[in-house]
Length: 455
Ligand SMILES: Cc1cc2nc3c(=O)[nH]c(=O)nc-3n(C[C@H](O)[C@H](O)[C@H](O)COP(=O)(O)OP(=O)(O)OC[C@H]3O[C@@H](n4cnc5c(N)ncnc54)[C@H](O)[C@@H]3O)c2cc1C
Image 1 (cartoon, rainbow, N blue to C red):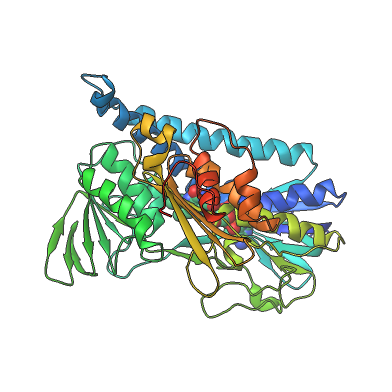
Image 2 (cartoon, rainbow, N blue to C red):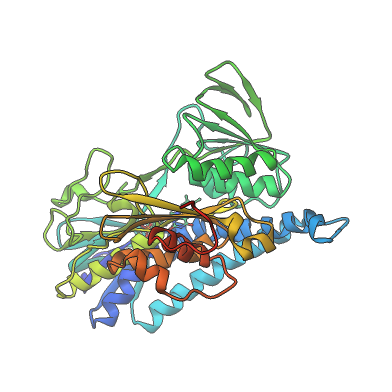
């Protein structure tokens, strides 16, 4: 359809085909609604194409490479372990492509109209697309995500100063890499390139992973040091001359490339929100209530653009909820926890809160006492469990291989109001890292087995 023709009519128009947007589209279609999904770049959005999936793909490859070169303690001596970085790049790109095609297939099978173009609200019921299409809708869902926070003096040029997207699209391993920022994205990118052989430096305004439990972070910092990663903590980049970065304490950091990873900001550029009553907060997030409704009747917002935490699984859950509400169901976004995983080595995974005090106690089980961890030579982590006076589980933190998979149990326990006894009495398969969760729960319930806490 072109300009001048009648607008197309749909029940639900979704702006942004990332993990939030396409999941909302599928759910709305399942509920019998006519759905238009507008995406200006690639289906799957940042998560599948530039962020979550590419980073985890490369982390997996770096783990294999690193393990191949560092397994003498198991009696494995592998000479001449070589990395073909071009092949690694091809694999990483092929994974995103396969997933993007998978999303396109699901849209097709669910009879979702996918439009390639940029959408702008002309009013509270009409979108103008950059390809000329006009879309009239009963409900709309904004799922436009986020973009990297820009940094003055460190403008991205794609060659020597890269953002996270570009850092995850290299077909070579740089000799050295300076990463500005020390959140989870920096740690993941830093550890993966260090494992592939790069000399990595991280510049941290306060410290690495400053918002996380220091005991957990200490485990990661120890591994970072083993990998040769240098952390410049408590400093900021003052100026730049090419790829030489002058820090606020006078130190000059020289490297082949600079990666700027100082956070994400919600993305609403060109969206035409001024033509609606949709409001944004001071940080630029679209304001929503617990039904994910904006201030404009019939327009919802989900995912990164709708606030913290900026995580893919939160976007997907919100996509389902927004679609169900738009389709007339009586539900709300009322999840108790959004689990988070840092894919460091070892991984850190958290659900809920693990701070002690105010009627909350915390028990810790160390991996030094776990059979599987000893077998793998991976004993530096632990599981912490937080619970209240009645034994209700309030939070779980896991520092361990496989923490990414183990944390779902904790999220389910908190959502369902499980107690430490429930978790302790649930049979966990042996020998697995998941037993560490059970062991921590047993300790919390006053009946520890494989660790002596004293009488
Ligand atoms: C390096 C990195 C690693 C990450 N790893 C993880 C991880 O392991 N796990 C995790 O949970 N999260 C991770 N995240 C966060 C995760 O990527 C985001 O939370 C997630 O992508 C948010 O999904 P979304 O649907 O809200 O937005 P996005 O995935 O950003 O999708 C938004 C889409 O909207 C499109 N769009 C924007 N404006 C318009 C418009 N006007 N018209 C049409 N289309 C438009 C964009 O092109 C984009 O495709 C990571 C982030 C980074 C940077």
